[in-house]
Image 1 (cartoon, rainbow, N blue to C red):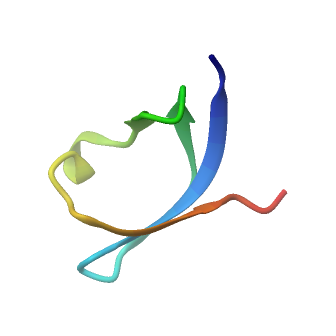
Image 2: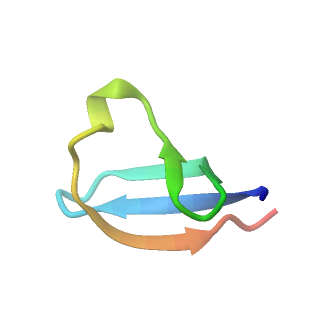
Length: 46
């Protein structure tokens, strides 16, 4: 159990920075991004 902080790039080119992922399977994003397709996920650089 735990969490990671990641940066996410979406298929449409938008990016989300410093997003929390719980237990390596559940991502917490604002509702407007709930159905967006993810292109790339990278660990957030501190």
